[in-house]
Image 1 (cartoon, rainbow, N blue to C red):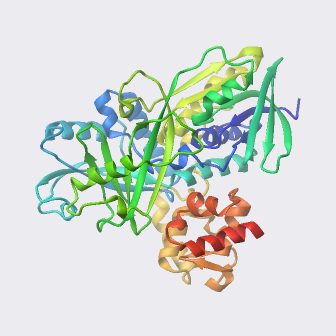
Image 2: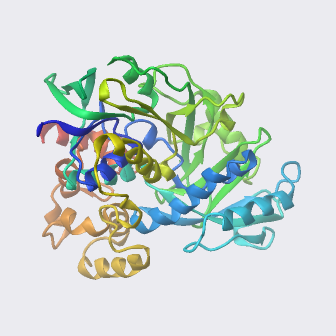
Image 3: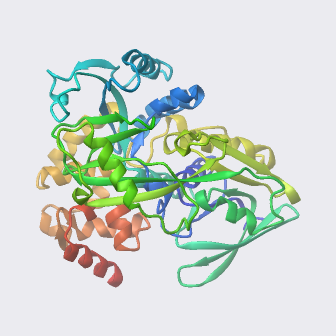
Length: 496
């Protein structure tokens, strides 16, 4: 039985890697298979926020908001290099929610999650404060509140890296082609990128396939007796050249009851999103529609003094959220909470993950392990609430001192490059820069502040196999490189 894994996980998004991390840290033998790259679908297509979900209060999802706000602080301590506190400006729009309703909601937002690290909400006179400068002149009052931004794809990567460091086997570009269970054991056939087939065995299976959760259930023998109905909702984002100065973000209300965020992004850009549209097409090919581009431009143009046009867009991304179908007619009102469905036929359980949001991935993983514990019989309890993610062991309180130390140690690195790399790698930064003492020691310079040493680190330590992996998931340097420079990175990976 030694070659049989305790848990086999299908899906390399935030839920799958989070469960792999938690399980490996409890001493379980874990295998995770992802058919593409880590975070190559839904988990890299978020609004890049670790937040409570202010608008969920309107739908009375108080438990979800409370849990999310608690997790915001847990994750800020676990990955302070990757998660960045930011102040949001919510202008009061006279024709929408009354000001007292907004203030009441923000009061709850400040207090129901046990906020300790982030500052509370304040009221702003937008006529006098700099944050009102980019807005149309009739916005005179607003509220400033706290949340956090995150590099979502790197958060997935850190969870996978932590799992691997604790003994989990992470298989990327590895597609599960058949699943069978009998006499307490799952048999899982996996085909890798070169067409090689391998059979794995496991005592339990976690279906964290996101938009493909139904497909995994369909290829299982026997299939689960019952399953949740999911509704596929597409969210799209646009990125435009920087719209305003300052490190703050904006939350804009729209007359369809949605909110749209405008967030500083990658130093030179503004990220705008998101849409919510029903989706029933191929989840492998998700793209923004012309109507979504126009919608996002129209919403922010109602607030900013400068009109935004689709021609201003420099990059877009879209993803599909597999949400539990709770009967809501409007896709944007469907719950973001998660549901775990347990099926234990043949004494070989399948745990299917429906829904969820990136902020609550750690709690979801704890709940998943709690459900699997009676079958697997492990004794170790929850451990991740006080554990740093890779590179985050300086803690939130130590981030500034760590940055100063790195500036002194690597005084030859351009400040903007060093700041980006501290944010990406945290205390693993010396592993990326190796023994270099000058930029020339980092190998080929591809443009912007990307050098060969960083690509080597991504390839050898972060499962990056293509230029897309490196430039659009491990980093967003693709935004800063020219077409020819991106092609040079692709050529490097082909030869590496």
